Length: 395
Image 1 (spheres, one colour):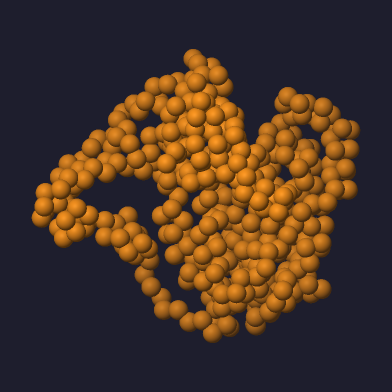
Image 2 (tube, rainbow, N blue to C red):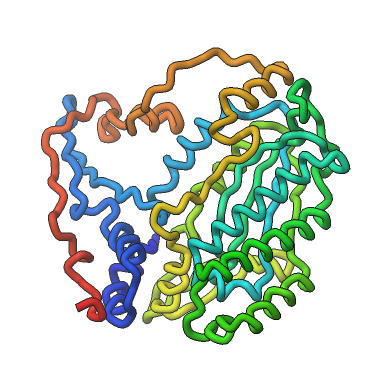
């Protein structure tokens, strides 16, 4: 199977020589290229029964690496199970109008924060409004920045319980079964909030207008741009509610730690071109195939490398960290959920693999009987091949 790592190894050096990459992108490429290779070190295990030797290399752990997200996602979902409520859940997606994409791409950290702020305040405020639900809601919000074609398409997925804690904190308020809040109402408030916070960032001087965006740097031009956005239709949609809490867990596992494209969507790499599978949502979600020059594929992938230390999974309302031990537990009691207090301890890789996948990492797959014992550690290379290949533009 062809992997993103193979594309980076074969074409990444040339790409870095041509383009002056921010360090976070360079670091992500290096991590993906060296993931599960001798560059990152590892260990040699020997079976105590048949003598079989197994060599294992370390993972990079980078959050943009498609090979490193599986167990992370499973562990995250496992941790969320104790926070589920016995009620329906809604999946609400907040998407900005496409005219904003170039501005967001130039100002990722600032504009992603605006996106989170506008979406979260919209749900929290409308949830408390007695015309809609009249309760304190909670939700998990996950930022995705891509479309199926790998171009920039920033949007936020929100997983929301179907109800909330009453405003006086004494009882549970159930939502309608088919929808939480009208998407038209959500969309209208969301775009107004986003626009207001974006304008605030403009007057604070926090926005970058380099290149083709330079004309927007003038006050009059930006104000016209912002005003016109309010006349656009902003897409906020709500998917059908989940039937059970278990369905929520399964769904979350597919969304939380997803990267721009997984290895299994890549069909082939041939003559400097990458062919991958995608769904065309404008054509009834039909599966199609796209062919891109390797350099263009790398460019599109790197569009979605997040700013350093940017948090892409966030918790709000009754599910926020400060409310989990108080309001969330009260909601669970009101809904008849009583959980025993279990001491939290860190689970190692091997224990996690057994608990989630049922795989005994130490069992010998060769004789299916013996136990694998580590006999030697493989040191990480001080300078991996990707690190040596410094982009020409930085010299």
